[in-house]
Image (cartoon, rainbow, N blue to C red; front, side, top):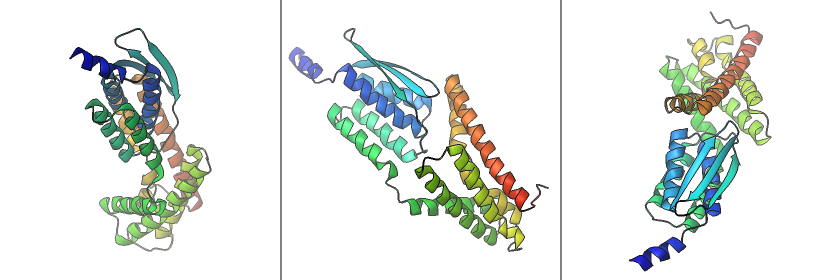
Length: 266
């Protein structure tokens, strides 16, 4: 029994290897829209599976991570930069499943690194045209949900597709996300104004109002509230501020289009 436990302990990776793995894991999980409490549970689960303890703190632009060997004084610290990424429930799910597979001893450290690499490479695997179609259908469904007619739904579909296509183009060119939101909101709302301008349907105001809903930062708002409940006040404040800024940019683009098209609020 003793010899078996010693053999297994030799197979454990070093504190540096675990720390670097957790740093990359934390970056992708947090950037894809995870709450802090979920990140904390997943990271601790991974560290405990390798017989180590982890301490980390999340700042607005960095994650400080320290991994300590529970049986000695060996430790390693690294700082991982936080970059804004697209919200992805698929990435969240795969990374959470990876943490459980590590915890259940289904995979070793080397295989875990390979799995993480595969997950990272799959971030852009969804066809961009399919994504545009799905987002456009979802936004048109919102229009119908609020009482829009079939014409308004069609207008919202086209305006959303155009705006989201522009969003993809601008994001590929590394344009500041706030400017991207302003431009896309302006384009979508300008096109949606055609419903009322040409008297195409009976609910032009709903077409205009729902044409920019795909830009609303719903997940950051929800995550900031969850982080606040878990007493992660710095992350909650940062996420809430980012969400408010994006909402303001959305409103600015919508306001500019309404002024140009002479559309009043009331």
